[in-house]
Image (cartoon, rainbow, N blue to C red; front, side):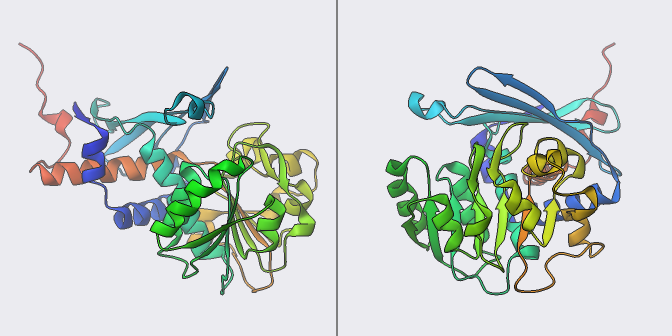
Length: 329
């Protein structure tokens, strides 16, 4: 089994190729061409750990991903997230590569999904991008919006105002002009495309703050009890898109509105079906659109196998390495 550390992973990661693979994986997920068991979720005193795994029909490999997050890590001076991905042969079941990505691939595939959602759901003209949060995911979401959105003006808000300066510096280095807002509602009121990236357990954006034509990508709510948007705003949306119906109704941003019965299953469209043209996305500039992204195992499969394939190509390897292993004796 090959061991790929973070430096090696970065060396063999092609963002454009990975984003294309993730987009295709969403389509296969919604078409039912996958095996994706329910997410494993382990809460612990300072955070939680997710285990996601699955297989895309016809692939040479399946992938098991372990990712943890602890937002108290900022005080300890270490990254708030970490993890690893194991690539296994779909023929032999043997592990062929361990990607010690330290949570980086999970962060990237989440940001790429946000960019894909914006590609299909953002209004035709985006004058201001709004970012709620200022951590790793907030920065990556902004970075990966660059290829799909021409706007370079940003409003940002974080509940810890002292972190605004760091984000503004990052945005400037990435080619954006960012300004700190006084509240999450102020960000929503002044933006056409909003991305929420926090672990909040109560709504930060109210319905009244959101103008017609706004698109919101919500990525923070990935466990039961988390919430960034008011349930009335979710119910008000003209288009509700989820990465996974089963996951989002259970522990995504829309879980509160589902529990309160202000939306129905028939109100929801999966992102893969929108990409494939099987379900409507945005059909008018004045529509409010919301994408609820909880993170689906097919994203992990796409990014892990893409990196492993690039590593194999760079090292002159082809095919399933587990088939070259012979039994002792």
